[in-house]
Image (cartoon, rainbow, N blue to C red):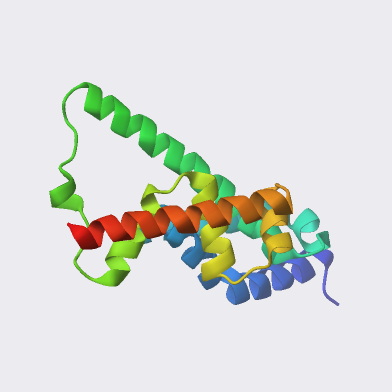
Length: 169
């Protein structure tokens, strides 16, 4: 006879196996760094395990954990911005040409995505890369459907402008 702990472990293991890759991809699209994305997905899944009773009772457990990924990514981005700002203050800024994207279209889109503000980037990634509905995206981000619509539209328009500038350069 299986104990409740064994059942929870088995459920979580199945959830992990089914969703880890998707969560890592979401983290990558939000952060732009494969290693950091893997770490962030692992952190999100660890947080999900600690709250597994709440996660598995949620209406849509994958959305619950996607929200954890988005929150962790936002926190990481804010930390990186603060660190970059501190380095800039002491004159140790990075040269964009050294760390800039490759010439491929994928690298250009990725670089443009990284320039979007956090909420716009999250809306664009969840709606277009993950093909989530406006309602699902709103639930994950904890915002209204109207906010998702406007942020997605503005994010796409900003991406188009950024990519057009890259083509002109």
